[in-house]
Length: 348
Image (cartoon, rainbow, N blue to C red; front, side):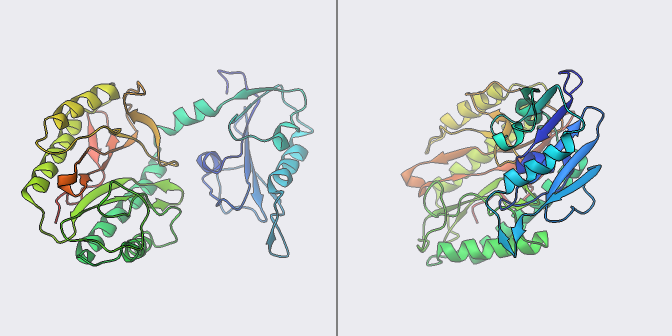
């Protein structure tokens, strides 16, 4: 804020409200946070003050009338913000251009409005210790989910039953309701939601799991042979993909270009006897499922210490029924990466 000569920053997206104040509400509500140049933070909460947020001034708006959710909550929260701002005023105000509505900007008077969303997203790349604790909990839930899956999978098991069992395992691991269910639960295909369909012998079940815990998302993947009898081709493909992860672990460290890591893995997987790969290699995780940095040639990002990345090499082919994707989460440290998801990688 000092560098850009901002008097105030106002955020309304749930992710940035949580990032700045440590408190999260779900999609039904419209909180607002504002930070002055001197560090003073206002948090506008639905219905009642949040418990121990990182904020100096807590104010509320009525989110419900007689238990019915209001549809004009953003306007109501903005009105509270306007009352707070009126005696102070501001010359230059930072907002999220993609999310900040006229309800908020109408209270800024003649202030110059600046987009601070790119700066907030850049800050979110580097995880604070409290964020890492939450991410580790979300990732640990993945381990419980894979344990459950390996004991449950067999020919004839319905994908919906797998999904339900894995959600129960994650809830038990986290000790509370999830804030996200994860990614892919469809068997015999590259991905997708669970279907009312039974798994077939010989298929590989790609389980790309990303439970959300208190707003932070894990993102891991394992491929499991439905009948626990993978073919030689499936075994060989799995070994090839696991070696791709080892390549990333050898190369990744602060200052390394993500494009260079991608190119090394692409060259390795191109030599597979069966299967092909043309997807991204990975991305950052945190308050969104996909964050920077991007291990993707469409971007030119460089790894930084403190980032948490999900890395997901894969091979797909009809002969592999349909293929496999193995994904680990890593913390970028000063000397390399720490694997945060040390769960078994094999197909059985």
